[in-house]
Length: 305
Image (cartoon, rainbow, N blue to C red; front, side, top):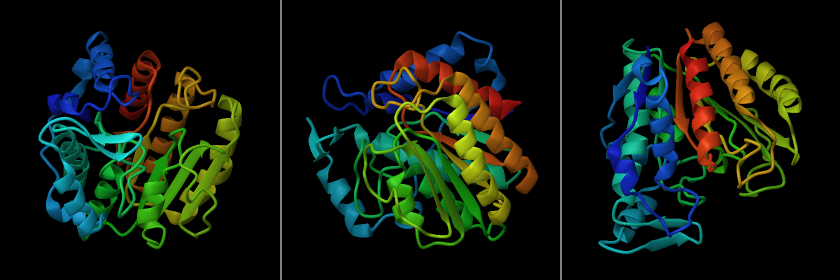
């Protein structure tokens, strides 16, 4: 049974009116799952806040201190023009990161083989010393670093199919050969950082605007398959962004639910070959509510089969 992390406190993270990264994102996913047979097929869990130790593995202490001191008692504090703190933001972010820390324990203890965290705020743009792009803590990086802290894990892969490049994850692990980071993304597009970085453990797959499902599949098979075969990860993480959907307002890739189903099954197949099927996935982008809900549903089905 697929383990599924969610928490009501995610709704308390609210940026300005009209901001695309809003509570309705995760609410739409939960509503869709409740209206289908999928809800009862999930093992429902609530995360605990991330530990300070887990955050310090991937973020500079000075950044963490500055973030905490910037959290307002009321109103909004701007980290950057797109990334705002309200009183509920950091409690939600600590739960989103904590879900990944706890998912690692769940999987490595043998209690679950696959996990999805339906969390917000997202994380893959958060660099070691800076939040940006709606992100405060890098959730998937917290999970990967927690896994590497276990004696039984020497290599992890992070696979990111968000429409935006996972610059924060690359920033954190670019010089760590124990972590393979493979990211597909629209290019040129936000965040315009690290997209052309060359490292043995970094696989960047830029996609032109208008890329459709067949072209996406071809690019993933060309870049990710040989990288995974060579690296042989002992645990796979997914930064699951669904803003590459054709209906999403923040990108111009032309993927559909079937393409997210395909890439998830591609990852599961790699996990079955290299690491006993162990996969931990966390929500990143996706801003058309209906398309997001349908795409997450397809992703969960592929993780569950």
